[in-house]
Image (cartoon, rainbow, N blue to C red; front, side, top):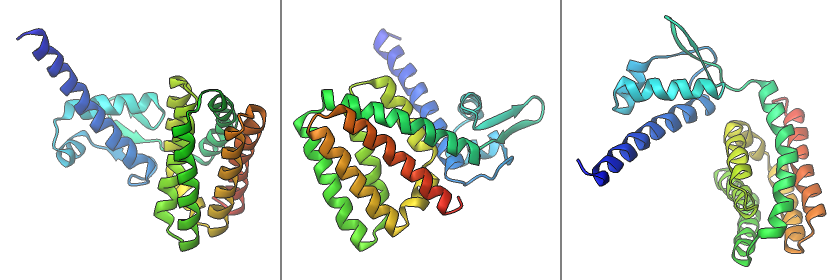
Length: 222
């Protein structure tokens, strides 16, 4: 086996493990599994069409993230995301999103600004039509564009993970017509500040945007 074949074998292995890991994490975060439910390697492997080995590796990685609790000689059980976890994530996000918006002012390209403008326009359209699924997708895209524009792979990675962890709550909050409309107004204000390269204002508005989401979560009793 030459170097090219070795590289392909390693790549395929990690690609498979990555797919298994992402699928199990997605199922936990979406609420497919209930709190403390056992995650059986054999059942998951059969469902995903893989052996127990990549499932076991994925569960160990998920334990490091705090989403799974592995009890020796018993099995792996769902930890999930608690109400406190959600609150903590949003508080931390509020500061990191602010920093991200500030850095985006320094590094964003005109092409990225144009993409953000399109997202804001489409979000307003879908909010009026009450197209909640599209609103959530566009909200994802708006934040991801700013993460990319920050030019920090570390900040991008952390915020992308946090954004993913609270996806179920985000879908619920954005299903509120008032929150969807207000969220897009806040996005517009953030975009305006970034377009003006006003880092201080962009940071404040991005922080306030997440704090308003926390307030909305509290009002909905989530």
